[in-house]
Image (cartoon, rainbow, N blue to C red):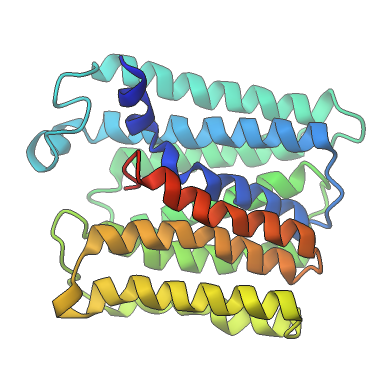
Length: 290
């Protein structure tokens, strides 16, 4: 398997959105993650993401043979057996990383983050296994991202604060709207517009949380404009382009993470999360961000 095929299978262009999810989880849990803990959690949750993407292609191989024959497995660039093995191996390595964070680092929270990782792995495999036929799959995908927040937060404290759950709920709603749109990528049309209302939830919650501080207000405005830009490709007949809307909304996850971080008063970390947004867009130019 070539490096390009490996990168396409892992949809690595979207990795900055996972990294900013981890930073948001830290901030919402109270902050204070050490450099070593941050590094381990970033690597571990990167492995969860890439492993999940591998398993997604492996489980979808028969459908992709009809709808997307250019994907690596149906096009014969790699075997389904290899992709299954690599996907599950990465989930296992991610779990080992969480155990290392919990037990080998000073101030580790023991099993807390590993329990979150186990729930995340279960949600990933369940989604990959039956998302095509499951009308609740947007909820399950949203739960996967929500569990990234909770797993990251659990690496700092085993007593997760209410604000972390609330922020995770905001991300869940955004992912429900995004995933509903993503399910229409192959059709390149939206069969129902009402699920997109979930994308509006962050705009109702975040202003209350950050009190219109200057940095937060700027990020809020940028996020709002970007979501409207993406929605134009979903609702305007003259601009209809569902795949482009989906990759745009994916990149917007970084801005949402930055908003939630800024709401905790950590402006520096919020700007680091903002940097994930152009990084995602740049990566999407080289590896499709489906």
